[in-house]
Image (tube, rainbow, N blue to C red):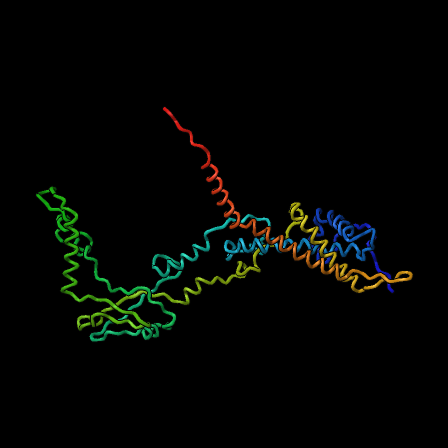
Length: 388
């Protein structure tokens, strides 16, 4: 039987002793590497029992434990900060940004981006231009196919979204005040139209506002009763005009504003390889070991022990029985593997629960509960009765 290497009792870490070398040059990692190796060997039974591991096995487990802690930490941070970082640049001048130690404050940019889309459809702003078009009215023709209009200007009807049709008449207030506000008779005419009655040079009497309102309503009712009231229906890009255009309407243009759906899509999609577009592009690198506090390092030590148990279990599975004078010793491979699996799962679950309990939502809920409890406690304080 081959000679099985065992733990010699001490070690001396040097950069390059770990598989990936993520933390090899960190002074704190270098100091703790040998300490962790000794801790794990003692927990595995050394020196009472031989431990069939070498220092590089403990170093590999230590590096993996730090990496698992880093991954769990940044997976939690990604869930917390993704909405604030989506679409942001993770590279400036060819240098990648590292937000591992940055404080991310929630911002309103996602809400602003969404409000711009609402603004486009509401016609109060947005990030997509509205364009103008028109159809030429023809007497006795009530229906107009906007797909034909789109084809005539080099567009496809499926790409056009009609946003507004200009069928409204001139506001009655404009007509009442004489266009720009001044009638042909000058200031006196405007004053009379606006409800100001003249009594000689520079002498006016301001009539009640109800006079203006009644006059504007009279104009609107006059037009509703005596004039044609134009309106429309827009169904499946078919524009129907009410009433049917007459000979007097021949050649007139009915204007409308429209938006291209392709423009809206392009405005909502930002194709930039230097911006965060998915969770895997979040600019979080490996954690700096020297920034991990005692709580985090304690978890890492325990996880390193669990990994060391797992490695030792696989080693002892290869040498399931070791001959000794007059008998054989059966090694505890299955016990080590079962314990290692249980310990790893328990530690990861405990870490995730800890992160979730310190999430922004959980902390705000806790603060609200504390505020409620504090107010309840203050409500039990006797109120002083003042006698004057």
